[in-house]
Image (cartoon, rainbow, N blue to C red; front, side, top):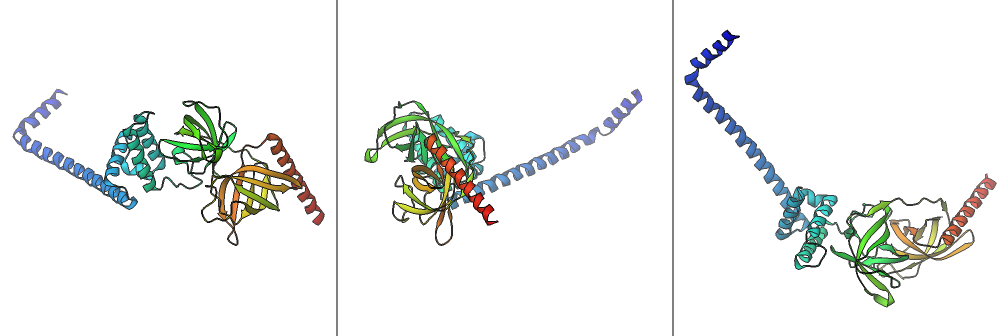
Length: 345
């Protein structure tokens, strides 16, 4: 072993004069490698920056709002382009920005909310597909039907700070109170909300208006399943708000035909293009049993034959006795259809 170490010492001693040149060469190689690495990082950074600017230009986002996006992304520790192209990241980062200003109204908070709303519209996040999960009540659209304290109302005046809900009669709720609300989000699911009540005031035509802060984490709950049976017969549809029917859709008292029915809702064929999420009153007959003014939410609207539409409606808050009566009528209709099928076999 001693001879081995002595051999290494003699080798270093014989090459001592050449070591400075070797060290310089090694340092030069390291410097070149670092320079190449930094150049690659710079190219990737410039490419991402160019992609971000091109995307912002296509979306109509101003330089000022793009700088705001960059700040949001930095604070949320995500890439700015990811924030603009992923709804969940957008909602998370913007919710954090609004929370930093606190619940009280201030010029900075209102300016932040206005910038977020501009960017939301530029990205199309204010007109999401009906099947998209609800990540925040800031995604609500005007006319969405909601349940609160035993009443059904419709949302309107939605911005990044709050939304208003129009209900038929005043409710015994206090400003500052956290209130439970519920809504059916198109065909996708039912959601339970917890929203702080900010203010109350008289609404239009004798209605009552409630102003709520947003829920940034709506709780998704499953819809109850009911047996669905094919049905035929007329159905009367009465929109319960000015936002329930698309412009030019015709009269407010609408007619349609039943396609199928269950204890939870109906599928109807109609000439009117109802708004998804809006509230309508329905009247129809099942197995000879009349049902009048059952409130329903429009879950979906799809094109059918001859310029008609198929509207999938879910019943909202109706008396349990009326719901049981409907379930019984549906069961009676199903039994009659089975008997007719057996007789014809």
